Length: 228
Image (cartoon, rainbow, N blue to C red; front, side, top):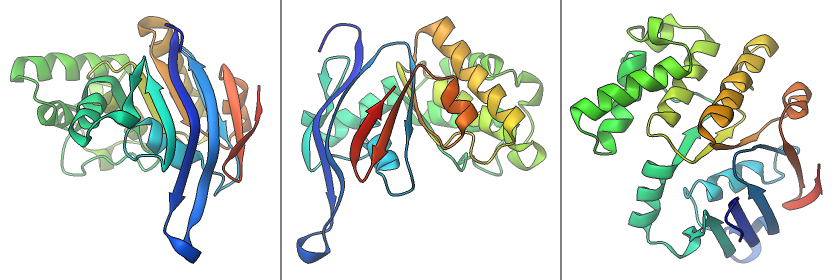
């Protein structure tokens, strides 16, 4: 893999279950995604998009094949090494936001840094910087139920970027948002790429979102059927 490649997969296969009940969700996925770009995975439900995101985020292991992130072969890592990789180099944004209801915006971001072992001083600095990046310092003391869906998603993004990851993975990040708010979220992503050189991979069904990413991979029945 060349130096500027962020991710490379070779022959990625993922089978769930065994014997007659086995389901092959991914069937030999090969791709190379350059650093500092926004990439979208598209395809109908069941095409393998979320499974692929989980594999790239080191949340799951393929049945066969290899995955490299910046020349690190994550499919050869131990569970502890993959956990450390997620904490230091990968940011995850979930469709459901997954915020802790009783915590403020600031506390939601700071809590993840606490789990990752940051000192109190480091946590405060990183959390405030992340909230500023998504334009929500004025809402930092509000809890999720006091914020709009777009604000909650921006908090989820702040939480994902607080540790300054190289790679952000977002599963349907705009699915629960109106089109205007969705475009605002995409602008936050684009700003992160332009200012910090991060790589962003997302899944989406939204035609407007797909038009503004750098490249698109279409999945169908566990295979990449097109790239544009």
